Image (cartoon, rainbow, N blue to C red; front, top):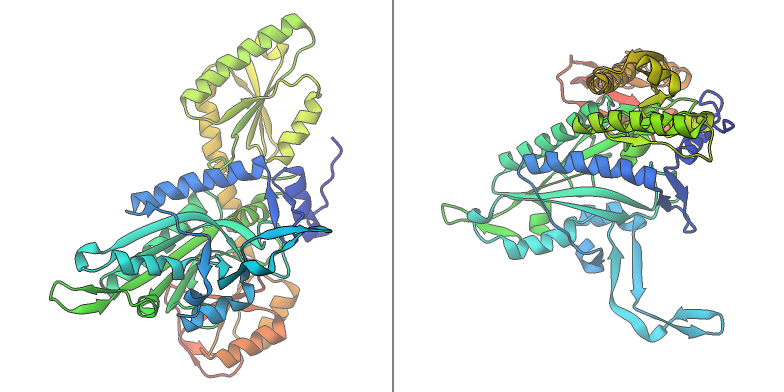
Length: 488
């Protein structure tokens, strides 16, 4: 298989597209801005779902499902919310088609009494349900998550990172007190941080968004931010403290233990298939996709080699024995015994697909009771003894997982800067990129000026306390340095 992947140093954007194509993760759809997620990509998403879903359930959440269509009037009830999403909404205006000379056309008599919005996010329709479910403090908290698709009418799209339709999960919780809701918001941020770092091997910074960057209708938006190999930032997950905004918009009250009627406190939080884009840009190389073992659909591929039918039978028996041992340790493994492809072709295909570990077994390995191991992350190969191979492979997968995180962490550290002057800030952003910590005076005017002049945005206000100083632009007092970067 000839290499078809552009070097990331030559053209990072094309490299990203090539990785997706050669890894068979997704294709562009006939519908502009949408994507077809191929089995390799969907299996990766399923593994992300499985891990996150268990983490949600371990923190007391349940799954439910709410309608794809939202009455237009619902979005009008929360002013900031409708303003934030108005330009991204797909609207259903008619209910049917009819035959025409050109095939079909919209039946003009089927115009809806009220237009329906294709779900851009579900706060409004969920809080309409919560109004019916909540009467007393005994009904709280409600801790619900849903796995769904959403539609946001994006003009500039890129597979996984930004598409008109994408898959995600969205949590929506209701609480009796502000303190409970804030604790929930922070708890789910920590769930996302743990998942990103321990499963995706993707280091992140946690913080709070500025007012101009927060979710429409939220009081505070917490986020995880990571830095990709092109030194651009990616918002990888968000957790929102919604205050009582949606409870007031939908008149959701509960009777407290003291007999008072009070508005409910709310949160929402979500991550999406954008995580797959982040994963690609965090670990992959010019040979193809690189996947952390915890999320790889297949952690190990065995490639058997033989020259005769007799050798084939012996080699495959040897492979199956090893497979059975590895499956007992819950290693996800496949045997590639296709006969219409050469071993070299298979090696290249598995490399492009990001399989963490390859085992190659031929007649000589049987004679010597050996196995050849090849790591995807480093390319290193070694011959190991057949005895105890399952535990060796399991240990090596853990090593690969840890090494990917350490490599990404070191890269981010090497590309993180702290500056004091605006001139230095502009020079670093323009010539080096990466994360840049700098003082900001807290005003939207200064934030917008920096964005206009440098294309860098405030990714977050870090949760860790920092030293006070002076804004790099205005010289006004600043409580702490905030995190800037150019971003996707």
